[in-house]
Length: 260
Image (cartoon, rainbow, N blue to C red; front, side, top):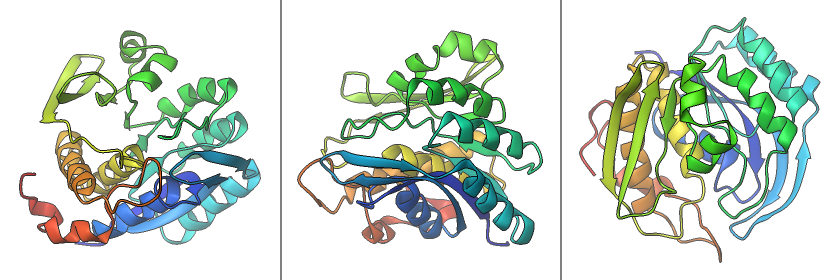
């Protein structure tokens, strides 16, 4: 089996808990080769986001073109997009790449920092049109227009239920024909959950890059995230990052995870 080549289009988290840093860590730990097109630089830690500097759109596209033309791409993960201009330009570029896209519609960091303005959120609909699956949490789903409106437009959604109350978290894969699959698991009580959305989306992209079907890629990615939550290193004074390389101690080979 060749190494899956995963292109990550996302912002940088200086604290290392989310964004490009979490994406690279996830893809690497799961046996893939991570390539990046950085859309924004953030000054960020476990306590909050202190600054955001979008990368110019032309430079984002140049990064994409550089790796696609030489190395090639088996799957794409998109996170923080940086600006509406970049979002629309990337959506146009995706037409020529032809790899499955996992879109994590990042709007707000775990610490509460705003990472997308109204124009950028609206532009995400163009990216969704190219996405194999979009992975909104419940607030993001509402901001994008809701389940009924999005599935009526033909979107495939992995709706993450972590923001709902209760001891059980329900994640649902839904599309134009209704619910495709659902996963239920007990909530892992922790303040160290920074980067869960990035980690999940990147792990799904890695699974698709391996040739797994979508429900299987999601199931394995969810398990990886749960292991990462259980192995959080406890860094910082706020919402710390999910697990570091110690997760390896709990991983069977990627093609045969044990149950967490």
